[in-house]
Image (cartoon, rainbow, N blue to C red):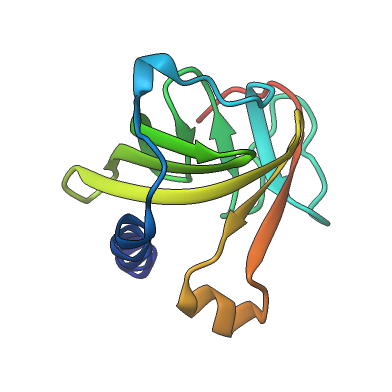
Length: 140
């Protein structure tokens, strides 16, 4: 879990340095995505009531984009067209409150890509991870 947190913090610093678009407050932002569970492309959606097997699951709800073991709330956001730079305050199990910055590209109402940090790019050879919608599952 610490590796994920460190990667997210590094991404946050880099993206903050690059940002030029105006920032909006969280209350003003609603991502153009369907609320619910998203899994990486190629990972099957679980049946209703089952927990997703992927540790890369994301849950979009009114407050933010959650990752496993973390409850997040968007505190700042800015967008350049369909590219969104989100700062989220997250409470993760076993960790202090964290400010995590993500860059996502909205591909459709039910699909987005998440920019991978340098470590993840080396591990997977991919610049981004594409997520697909799996329905309005309960956020565990």
